[in-house]
Length: 150
Image (cartoon, rainbow, N blue to C red; front, side, top):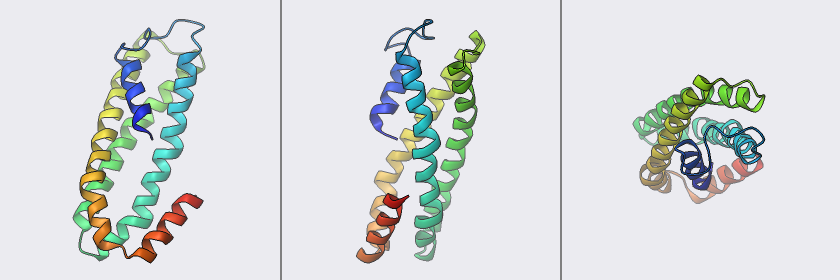
C-alpha cells in the first residue's frame, strides 16, 4: 500500500479533504474507497502472506525469530483493524451506511492507517537491515522474483 494512499486516507477521514461523510453523488469517495479496499485486500494481504511464509522462516533460521514474531503479531493487529473497516466500506459503497457507521469507519480507518504506517517504519528500520545480513544475493533474487510473480 502506498504512503500516498495512507496520506489520502487520513485526509479523507479527518476532514482535511472534502466533506466527510461524502454527500450523495460524490464520485471521489467511491473511487477512493474502491482503491483503498483493493489495497487492503490484495496488496497488504499479499505482502503480509509473503513475509510470513517466505521471508520470516529465513529470519527464524538465522536467529532473528523475535523480530519475525513481532512483525507477525503486528500483521495480526493490522488485519484485525482492516476486517471491520472493509466491511463498513463495502456497506457504504452499497449505500447502506448509517450515521454511526461513518463514525466507526473513521475510527477504524485512522487506526488502520496508524498501525500500518508504524509497521512500515519498523520494516524499513529493522527488517530490511536484518534481511541484508540474512539473505544471500541468490536467495534475495529468488524471493524477489517469487513476490513479483505473485
